[in-house]
Image (cartoon, rainbow, N blue to C red; front, side, top):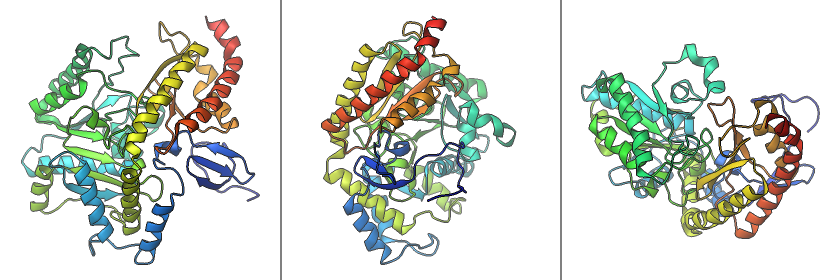
Length: 449
C-alpha cells in the first residue's frame, strides 16, 4: 500500500499496515512482530486466526451469510442464544443480538424503559451511571458515559443522566478490603436515587470489573451486593455492562460472577465475538421481556442483529473457550502477570497501582505514590508509554484516569490463550518501554518534586 490514505479515525497518527495475525502475535507488512498485549481493545480473547473458529465460519458462509431476523430464525443464532443463557444467572434466558458494545448498551436501556412503560411506571426514565465511565459511542450510551473529552462536544445533543462516583478506593485513599468502603460507595448511589426521586429512576448501570475508563477497577468489598440491595429497595433495574469484562476474561464468564450478584440486564460484546465477527448481545431476565413482548414487541433493532455468520463465529468462540479451559487459564496466567506487573513497582516509583482480575489488568502511573498525585499533564504519559511499548513490539492500551483530563493508566490484557512463557515476553518488552519512558520523564519529575 502506497500513497495517500483515505481512512481517518481518532487522530492523524499513522500505523504500519497489518499483514497477518496468529495466536497472541501480529505482523506488519515489513515483517515486524508485535505482541497483542491488549487483545486489540480487549477484544481478541481467544487469540488470532483460531483454525476451528475460521472453519465454523467457512461452513456457515457456504450455507448463508445473512438472514434478516424478522424473516428467519437461524440455527447458529438459536444455538448461541441457548449457550449464552446457560452461562448467565438463572432466569436470564432472553438474548437479543447486536453488532457491538454500544448497540448492546443502547438495547439494554431501551428495553429497561419499554418495560417500565409497559408496567405503568412511565415516570421512570433516568439511568444513573458512574464517574468516570464509558458505555459506548452512540448518543444514548454516551449520555451514560462520564469521560469529558468524549462527551463534551456532544453535550447539547444528549439527555444528561445522573452520575455517582465510581468506587475507586485506592485513588480515594480508602481500604478496598473493608466492607465499609463498599457500603460508602453504595450509599452514594442510594443518596443519588433519593435526590433524583426514586419514581424517576429507571436503572443503574455499572461495569462489574472496570474497563478503559477506570483501568480494570475491581470493586471494594461488599460493594456489588450492597448495590444490588439498593436497586431492589427502590425498584431500580440493575444493568451490568460486561462488554469488556464478560466472555471469560476475568476468569469467570461474567465479571459479576466473582461476587455472585445477578443483574436484571447484561450488555455483552468485545471478547464475546473475539474479533472474528462484529457481535454483541443484550441478555435480559424473563420477567422483563415477557410483558414487553405481550404489549406489542420490543421497539428496537438493527439490520445485522442475529446475523448467522456472526452467530456461528460467536458459538465457535465459546466452544473454544470451554474446550481449551481458557477461563481457567485466564485466572491462572492472570495471577502470574499481575504478580510480575506488581514487581515492576519496585523498579519504577511512578507506578502507583496495579489492579484487575484475571487477564483484565492495568497499572496506573503517578508522580507520588503517597499522595497519588498524577504525572504532569504535559508529559502525555498515556500516549508516550504506549509509543515506547509499540516501538518494543508490545501493544498496550491507555486512557486518562481522571475523567479523561489527567492521570494515566495502561491496560495489559493479552488473549486468554497466553502462556506463562509469553507473560515473560510481555514483561521483558514492557520493562524496556518503562525504562526508556523513565529516562524521558526524569527531568520533568525532578522539576515537579
